[in-house]
Image 1 (cartoon, rainbow, N blue to C red):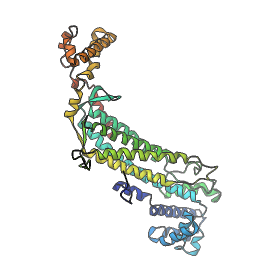
Image 2: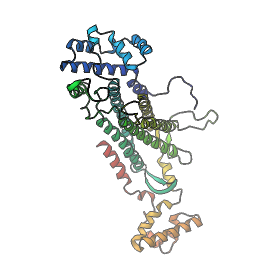
Image 3: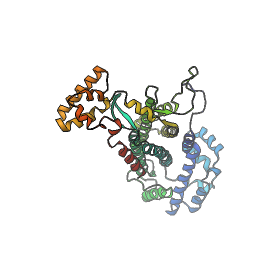
Image 4: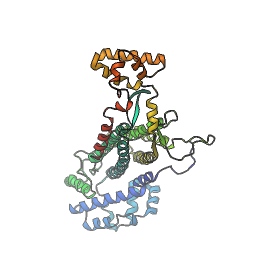
Length: 440
């Protein structure tokens, strides 16, 4: 699809996600971290209390000189130094001496990135839970709606649409759990100086780091400096990529089942399908979700490459990759939610498709019923013979069985045996269990 807009296509969720990583939001976090550092250092007698008070009072975007910041960026070419130089112009001369005292740029940027990913991750979890709620309702609604299960593109056995949705829900639930685990595992920043030894803070370094994290509402610092370890961010990318692929998996299945040749689901999106074919109504939301799933997961590779640092930290950091992945995932989830909002289930078409193989989907049911009388091996061969007969005669498996003198009398005793609705196993209960597990 060609690009017809200079603005990135995005949903309200995507725009809100992008705002979490905006330059304005990043500056606000940096001001917050620097103010917390000054307050903690003042408590330890490292920074004058007056300077800490001044820094804290000016740590707001309302007081931040944006024009001066842009001028300093052009002059010094260092993102954090430009912020500090601009901010210093709002501080008393004595206070300027104590701003960013003992910290290093990587301390600030890593801590801010964690804060942003925490906010982004929780926003994604909320969206994912919204999708899960739709899936759970759909699974219960269609817990007993029979349809054919397909394996390797072939009709296999009857089950229910509710059970299919239950498998989607379980997979989506694992994606949500993985993201929640990451958010719980990586809830702290870092403040340990240039190479992580706390040398610039002195003996109080670990205490300063711990207290600053507490001021920011973050968890206890880790025992070892991790500025040179990028695996946690790659792990975030892996988690989001897996979640995106699961969303793509669901949308792709809907896409296939909505095709004219199957027509078990429909995407009632009202979209025009073609400029020349008036009859077409394309599954545009399915296509959107599948495409975005590929794009979101494709952003993982730079994050994996990012792990390969040079020596103890000599590498650029590319938080924009994480930002773009989060924005893409927010857009994807919004489109997936829309897809399930307009999804139409066609039970009558599911029932019709169950009959397309003329009862062959019940060969297993017949085999195990016969096995109780003649043994599994003999029953398997007997049903294989019936299948061949049915195909040669162009009749159904049921008709072939009723015409077999050895099987017909016994089959007459079990008239429901070759009813597809009677061989869905515990599919309805599985659908219920999937919904209950999510709600629990």
